[in-house]
Image 1 (cartoon, rainbow, N blue to C red):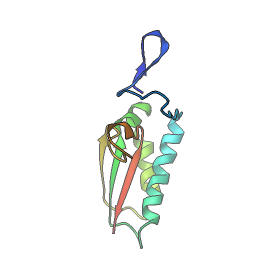
Image 2: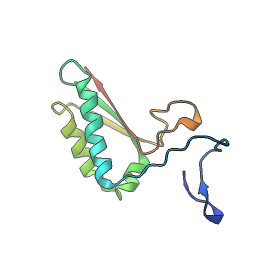
Image 3: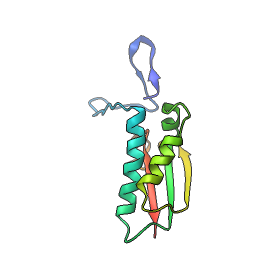
Length: 116
């Protein structure tokens, strides 16, 4: 969803087929920060030992939802990592972590990849 359409409907980035399942979610600044910590912790837990480097794909819409104040999210990411390895991050538009094609977006997602 990209906003409200004329008449009160939803304006979406792509068409939605009739009878498609739609999952509407809600987030807060706290849940954005908490999810960053959780993603980093899960990425670290999957490795045998501490990560030697970390790559973070962060949806640019999360930054907007944090009113540009990303310090808390960065601190939470570092807190979730085992140690403080070098971290490289990039803002995306939801294209990372897709489940399928253009209609499989994961908007407002953070994807953390740890390297050992």
